Amino acid sequence: MPDDVILFDVGDGLAHVTLNRPARLNAVDPEAIARWQDLAHEIAGRDDIGAVLFDAAGRAFCAGGDVVAMSELAGSSAMGERPADVVRRLADRIHDGHRMLRESTKPIVAAVQGPVAGGGLGFMLVADLVVASERATFASRYSDIGLTPDCGVSTLLPEAVGVRRALELTLTSRTLSAAEALDWGLVAEVVAPEALDARAREIADGWLAGATHAFGQAKRLVHAGQARSFQASLDDEAATIGAAIETPDARAAIARFAARSPSR
Image (tube, one colour):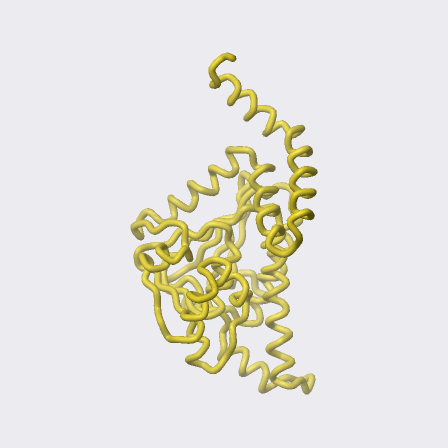
């Protein structure tokens, strides 16, 4: 499996993941899908990673799945698989990677420099914060090729923008500008193109310089709370904050807070 289709390095607690198929608008082919799944498991399992910076090479962020490559694979399967089975197997691998990153305690910031389409929305929304360039655009395009949402889009998109707006984006050919995406809540910030990389890195560095354990657990709690009872979330919150108060990060942060507080 080539490792240049998605670049990966770790330094000073930061994992840097870069989609690297710029000639195909960073659409993921079977090799990139396998690499994505493997990296997701590695990131989730490594104790030396405290945050993730996710970006892409070239002019586009991600066009989702490489439909041409997947169709060719489905049509030439040596195992006699039906096209539906081939595509489903590839989708399952993407989804496994998404689930690992979403359920991990590693906060993720995405730097989106250009167009995002189709399943690319799902890749982008795996991140916990999205910073977009003024040149970025956002579209579904599923209806244009007769396919349905994948890569978590049917869950992650309405979670970000609401059901009605998610339906508008997936059932039409509408393209959002970066400013519209900010207004919809699809991205957290919009910056000038030349400021994008530095701003995303600033966010990641802030996580690493602060109470890294607490950031990771806060991410986990918020995501987990969407799929369980309120009482289960309350119980998890109580256990998690009880554990957090004993960490060195929390002790140091509380001491700094107390030092700044007026005497009582």
